[in-house]
Image (cartoon, rainbow, N blue to C red):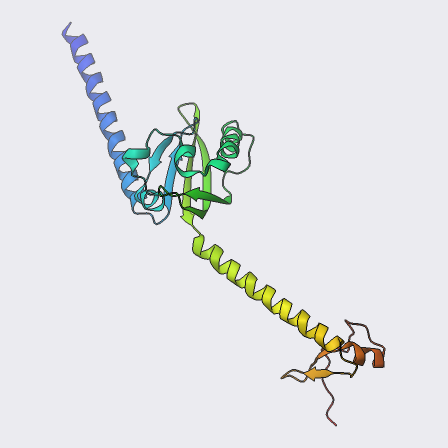
Length: 211
Protein backbone atom coordinates (compact mmCIF):
# COMPACT_ATOMS: atom_id res chain seq x y z
CA UNK A 1 0.00 0.00 0.00
CA UNK A 2 2.70 2.47 1.04
CA UNK A 3 4.79 1.40 -1.94
CA UNK A 4 1.87 2.15 -4.31
CA UNK A 5 1.29 5.54 -2.71
CA UNK A 6 4.98 6.40 -3.04
CA UNK A 7 4.99 5.38 -6.71
CA UNK A 8 1.87 7.45 -7.37
CA UNK A 9 3.39 10.43 -5.59
CA UNK A 10 6.62 10.05 -7.53
CA UNK A 11 4.65 9.91 -10.79
CA UNK A 12 2.69 13.04 -9.85
CA UNK A 13 5.90 14.89 -9.04
CA UNK A 14 7.45 13.82 -12.34
CA UNK A 15 4.39 15.04 -14.24
CA UNK A 16 4.41 18.35 -12.37
CA UNK A 17 8.11 18.85 -13.08
CA UNK A 18 7.62 18.03 -16.77
CA UNK A 19 4.71 20.47 -16.94
CA UNK A 20 6.75 23.16 -15.20
CA UNK A 21 9.67 22.64 -17.58
CA UNK A 22 7.34 22.86 -20.57
CA UNK A 23 5.87 26.12 -19.28
CA UNK A 24 9.34 27.56 -18.67
CA UNK A 25 10.46 26.53 -22.15
CA UNK A 26 7.37 28.12 -23.70
CA UNK A 27 7.94 31.31 -21.72
CA UNK A 28 11.58 31.48 -22.84
CA UNK A 29 10.55 30.95 -26.46
CA UNK A 30 7.88 33.63 -26.24
CA UNK A 31 10.39 36.07 -24.73
CA UNK A 32 12.79 35.45 -27.61
CA UNK A 33 10.01 35.88 -30.18
CA UNK A 34 8.81 39.08 -28.54
CA UNK A 35 12.30 40.53 -29.05
CA UNK A 36 12.22 39.77 -32.78
CA UNK A 37 11.74 42.65 -35.22
CA UNK A 38 9.64 40.49 -37.56
CA UNK A 39 6.11 39.46 -36.74
CA UNK A 40 5.76 35.79 -35.77
CA UNK A 41 2.52 33.88 -36.31
CA UNK A 42 1.75 30.22 -35.64
CA UNK A 43 -1.39 28.41 -36.76
CA UNK A 44 -2.62 24.87 -36.23
CA UNK A 45 -3.86 22.47 -38.90
CA UNK A 46 -7.28 24.13 -38.87
CA UNK A 47 -5.86 27.60 -39.44
CA UNK A 48 -6.43 28.82 -35.87
CA UNK A 49 -3.79 31.12 -34.40
CA UNK A 50 -1.64 29.52 -31.70
CA UNK A 51 1.30 31.93 -31.59
CA UNK A 52 1.51 35.73 -31.89
CA UNK A 53 4.41 37.93 -30.83
CA UNK A 54 4.73 41.62 -29.98
CA UNK A 55 5.79 42.54 -33.51
CA UNK A 56 2.64 40.85 -34.84
CA UNK A 57 0.56 42.96 -32.47
CA UNK A 58 2.23 46.11 -33.79
CA UNK A 59 1.94 45.01 -37.42
CA UNK A 60 -1.72 43.99 -37.40
CA UNK A 61 -3.21 45.94 -34.48
CA UNK A 62 -4.50 42.88 -32.59
CA UNK A 63 -3.20 41.76 -29.20
CA UNK A 64 -2.25 38.15 -28.59
CA UNK A 65 -5.18 37.77 -26.15
CA UNK A 66 -7.57 38.84 -28.92
CA UNK A 67 -6.29 36.53 -31.67
CA UNK A 68 -5.23 33.27 -30.00
CA UNK A 69 -7.60 30.49 -30.99
CA UNK A 70 -9.27 32.52 -33.74
CA UNK A 71 -9.06 31.77 -37.50
CA UNK A 72 -6.15 33.60 -39.10
CA UNK A 73 -8.04 34.36 -42.30
CA UNK A 74 -10.80 36.23 -40.43
CA UNK A 75 -8.31 38.66 -38.90
CA UNK A 76 -5.38 39.44 -41.17
CA UNK A 77 -6.31 38.25 -44.68
CA UNK A 78 -8.35 40.54 -46.97
CA UNK A 79 -11.76 39.02 -47.74
CA UNK A 80 -11.03 38.58 -51.46
CA UNK A 81 -8.02 36.36 -50.69
CA UNK A 82 -9.47 34.20 -47.91
CA UNK A 83 -10.68 31.32 -50.07
CA UNK A 84 -7.32 31.06 -51.84
CA UNK A 85 -5.53 31.21 -48.49
CA UNK A 86 -7.63 28.36 -47.12
CA UNK A 87 -6.88 26.26 -50.20
CA UNK A 88 -3.14 26.94 -49.85
CA UNK A 89 -3.28 25.97 -46.16
CA UNK A 90 -5.04 22.71 -47.04
CA UNK A 91 -2.32 21.85 -49.57
CA UNK A 92 0.36 22.66 -47.02
CA UNK A 93 -1.39 20.56 -44.39
CA UNK A 94 -1.50 17.58 -46.72
CA UNK A 95 2.08 18.04 -47.87
CA UNK A 96 1.00 18.88 -51.44
CA UNK A 97 2.59 22.33 -51.53
CA UNK A 98 6.18 23.53 -51.90
CA UNK A 99 5.58 26.93 -50.34
CA UNK A 100 7.27 26.00 -47.07
CA UNK A 101 10.68 27.62 -46.68
CA UNK A 102 10.17 30.08 -49.53
CA UNK A 103 9.93 33.88 -49.35
CA UNK A 104 6.33 34.75 -50.23
CA UNK A 105 4.86 38.17 -50.96
CA UNK A 106 1.21 38.69 -50.08
CA UNK A 107 -1.24 41.27 -48.78
CA UNK A 108 -2.44 41.49 -45.18
CA UNK A 109 -4.95 43.78 -43.54
CA UNK A 110 -4.59 45.83 -40.35
CA UNK A 111 -7.27 45.89 -37.70
CA UNK A 112 -8.18 49.39 -38.93
CA UNK A 113 -8.87 47.99 -42.40
CA UNK A 114 -5.69 49.23 -44.09
CA UNK A 115 -4.04 46.75 -46.44
CA UNK A 116 -0.27 46.45 -46.73
CA UNK A 117 2.27 44.27 -48.52
CA UNK A 118 4.30 41.75 -46.54
CA UNK A 119 7.01 39.18 -47.09
CA UNK A 120 6.49 35.89 -45.28
CA UNK A 121 8.69 32.88 -44.65
CA UNK A 122 6.61 29.84 -43.77
CA UNK A 123 7.65 26.58 -42.12
CA UNK A 124 5.63 23.39 -41.64
CA UNK A 125 6.18 20.68 -39.07
CA UNK A 126 4.18 18.05 -37.23
CA UNK A 127 3.08 18.51 -33.61
CA UNK A 128 1.31 15.66 -31.82
CA UNK A 129 0.59 14.00 -35.14
CA UNK A 130 -0.89 17.08 -36.81
CA UNK A 131 0.61 19.70 -39.10
CA UNK A 132 1.42 23.11 -37.65
CA UNK A 133 2.70 26.21 -39.38
CA UNK A 134 5.01 28.98 -38.25
CA UNK A 135 5.69 32.16 -40.19
CA UNK A 136 7.90 35.21 -39.86
CA UNK A 137 6.30 38.23 -41.51
CA UNK A 138 7.70 41.66 -42.32
CA UNK A 139 6.10 44.78 -43.76
CA UNK A 140 7.56 45.59 -47.19
CA UNK A 141 5.41 48.64 -47.95
CA UNK A 142 8.45 50.94 -48.15
CA UNK A 143 10.32 48.48 -50.37
CA UNK A 144 7.39 48.17 -52.76
CA UNK A 145 7.01 51.96 -52.88
CA UNK A 146 10.73 52.34 -53.69
CA UNK A 147 10.47 49.70 -56.43
CA UNK A 148 7.45 51.46 -57.88
CA UNK A 149 9.31 54.80 -57.85
CA UNK A 150 12.28 53.25 -59.66
CA UNK A 151 9.96 51.71 -62.25
CA UNK A 152 8.20 55.04 -62.76
CA UNK A 153 11.56 56.78 -63.27
CA UNK A 154 12.64 54.08 -65.73
CA UNK A 155 9.38 54.39 -67.67
CA UNK A 156 9.58 58.18 -67.69
CA UNK A 157 13.14 58.05 -69.04
CA UNK A 158 12.10 55.55 -71.70
CA UNK A 159 9.17 57.78 -72.70
CA UNK A 160 11.42 60.84 -72.90
CA UNK A 161 13.95 58.98 -75.04
CA UNK A 162 11.20 57.71 -77.31
CA UNK A 163 9.77 61.22 -77.67
CA UNK A 164 13.21 62.67 -78.44
CA UNK A 165 13.91 60.02 -81.06
CA UNK A 166 10.51 60.56 -82.68
CA UNK A 167 11.15 64.30 -82.76
CA UNK A 168 14.61 63.85 -84.30
CA UNK A 169 13.30 61.38 -86.87
CA UNK A 170 10.69 63.93 -87.97
CA UNK A 171 13.44 66.31 -89.13
CA UNK A 172 14.66 66.36 -92.74
CA UNK A 173 18.14 67.39 -91.64
CA UNK A 174 20.56 64.80 -90.30
CA UNK A 175 21.24 65.21 -86.58
CA UNK A 176 23.84 63.52 -84.42
CA UNK A 177 25.24 64.06 -80.93
CA UNK A 178 28.15 62.77 -78.88
CA UNK A 179 28.21 62.02 -75.18
CA UNK A 180 30.93 63.08 -72.73
CA UNK A 181 33.07 60.09 -73.78
CA UNK A 182 32.86 60.98 -77.44
CA UNK A 183 30.42 58.20 -78.32
CA UNK A 184 27.91 58.86 -81.09
CA UNK A 185 24.56 58.69 -79.39
CA UNK A 186 21.40 59.72 -80.75
CA UNK A 187 21.28 60.22 -84.45
CA UNK A 188 18.13 60.54 -86.49
CA UNK A 189 16.51 58.82 -89.45
CA UNK A 190 17.71 61.42 -91.96
CA UNK A 191 21.33 60.77 -91.01
CA UNK A 192 20.82 57.01 -91.02
CA UNK A 193 19.33 57.23 -94.51
CA UNK A 194 22.37 59.16 -95.74
CA UNK A 195 24.76 56.58 -94.39
CA UNK A 196 22.54 53.57 -95.12
CA UNK A 197 22.43 52.56 -91.47
CA UNK A 198 19.58 50.89 -89.64
CA UNK A 199 18.09 52.24 -86.42
CA UNK A 200 20.40 50.02 -84.32
CA UNK A 201 23.49 50.41 -86.47
CA UNK A 202 26.89 49.61 -85.07
CA UNK A 203 27.71 53.25 -85.80
CA UNK A 204 25.86 54.11 -82.60
CA UNK A 205 28.25 54.15 -79.68
CA UNK A 206 31.38 54.56 -81.83
CA UNK A 207 33.90 57.14 -80.76
CA UNK A 208 34.22 60.26 -82.83
CA UNK A 209 37.58 60.47 -84.61
CA UNK A 210 39.56 63.62 -83.93
CA UNK A 211 40.18 65.66 -87.01
